[in-house]
Length: 103
Ligand code: 5GP
Ligand code: ZN
Picture 1 (cartoon, rainbow, N blue to C red):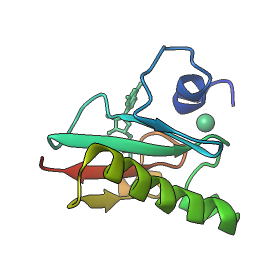
Picture 2 (picture 1 turned 90 degrees about the vertical axis):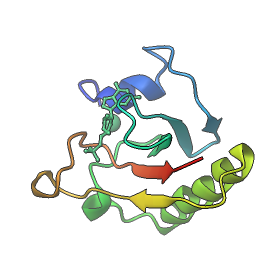
Picture 3 (picture 1 turned 60 degrees about the vertical axis):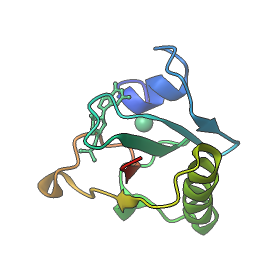
């Protein structure tokens, strides 16, 4: 999606550093961190929110990416947030999982 900020990040338009990447997802630091560790796990395909996600394989890949990146950085205690829908505070309409940790 051309006007989507996360699609632009995925396409490398801002030279964002990826903490983790595989065929399905990228993980990068939130620009306004709300915890000492604040990462965003983002599918490479544009899906607006969890409401629009139908691909069960991708659902699994998103959580597997959470496990992979937290293991990679040695974070074994964390919270996940998935804001879904503008009324719930979703600002970027490209599905993402927030990882929040205190290390
Ligand atoms: P939401 O409220 O949609 O669940 O969260 C969107 C998150 O994306 C916010 O925490 C915000 O700080 C982060 N964000 C918005 N624009 C950018 C950006 O250009 N780069 C990065 N790294 N994070 C962003
Ligand atoms: Zn997008």
